[in-house]
Length: 281
Length: 189
Ligand code: SF4
Image (cartoon, rainbow over all chains, first blue to last red; front, side, top):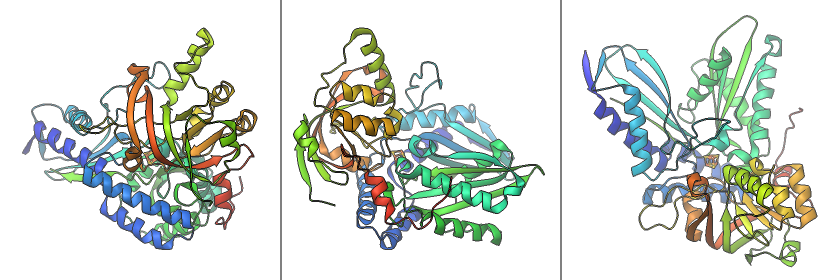
């Protein structure tokens, strides 16, 4: 058994959260630079340029890229040969978020309850944490700061198997078109197809961690990713919805086995505040 | 897109009449912040007392919940939040004299109609460019609902804060107009 102390987890989570809030992932920044050339609308080009400047300022001045510093979401893979000592891993992750919020001057963006008082929790906890147990003696932590504006435009539906591929495409494109200027495009679009009602949404969120330009190993899924990306950019939404040819920089699809009666589809819209990273301990 | 117009709050009908969807504007002067929780509370209080926490006549509300300022900053990152969430409250505020709102994204039909009726505009700021936008905010002071934290009502001072007229008093809509030219496929409902 390899021992990992919770103090190490607190420190590393704090740093990864602050890092994600100040610095967009390199692959995404590169994709925006490429997108600028591809964008046909003058205002669209200007907006991409402004977004890149914002990324630069946030990174250099170490300030939050967006004022909505997001809902902290973690995917944690714990190696089954790891022994966590000194406390609970859940508390450690939340402590990391709490410290990042304070030291990193992040906005407190969570409310205790959804429909009663909606009082702010004050420190961005509790984070949403998905745990998985995997072989090995390491812990892998993936983090995403999910802004409300784009999360609000995400959707899930239970199609009929007879709706098939056409039904899936239509649902994804409609969701992107409706999200429009509300969700701060250029988007990265995460799609989950299959599984159950809830699992399709988890897949859609997980898909967003894949690098920009990366294609699914199943060539049928890879082709669907490319087709949907090309169609998304014909919707006219454009950067920040002012019209243009860059609505999305990528579409990522994950698929899972499914009940013979079902065809769940979830679309997780990711705005240009595409803040995510991962570490291994 | 037309040339940039420089305007200063409070806004008058003359200024509003001159603005068309798509116009670029540099906005200066005092601006008030409010988002979901502050809108809800403001209008609940108005129902009971007939008063709002600030004199709204001619004013502009910026839909924003900034990050806390770092030492040496007047405000943290401060970009617009999605405007349609305030649609339920906006017509009443326009009726009471509000002349402008700043946010991102579409407005609903009731707001567009109220803009025409009460002569007011909805400005869009570039969503997510919060680190840049905060550089145009020169002062910030909480004037109500401090317990709401990031959602408290702040009085800000803007200097040449860049916005685009999204909805004007003539029914113009910058998003619909802008997207038309690039829409190559239609997804039927
Ligand atoms: S949708 Fe994204 S970029 Fe836009 S305000 Fe929200 S977090 Fe920021």
